[in-house]
Image 1 (cartoon, rainbow, N blue to C red):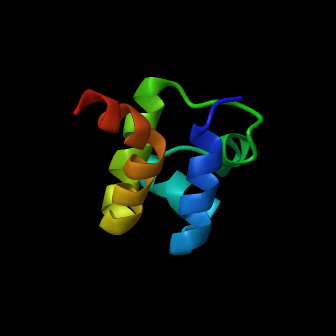
Image 2: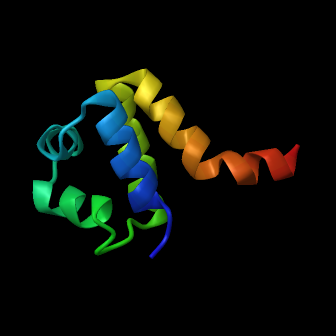
Image 3: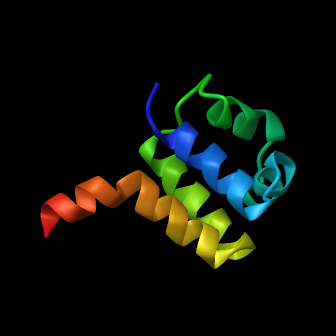
Length: 79
């Protein structure tokens, strides 16, 4: 599986964001967040953007950390 789930789980733990809280902010069921965080399923690129939007609403620092951890290597390579 991809790294989105690992990064999401790390960020959620670091910032005290529960699966239910993120799911509510995204307007989805908590089981979806569970599947991503436990690497059962990978979120698609559109979903990753929705995760970022939800994290931004819940805790902008968490969104920044997710972006950094998930896209950090790609961003550094572009510079």
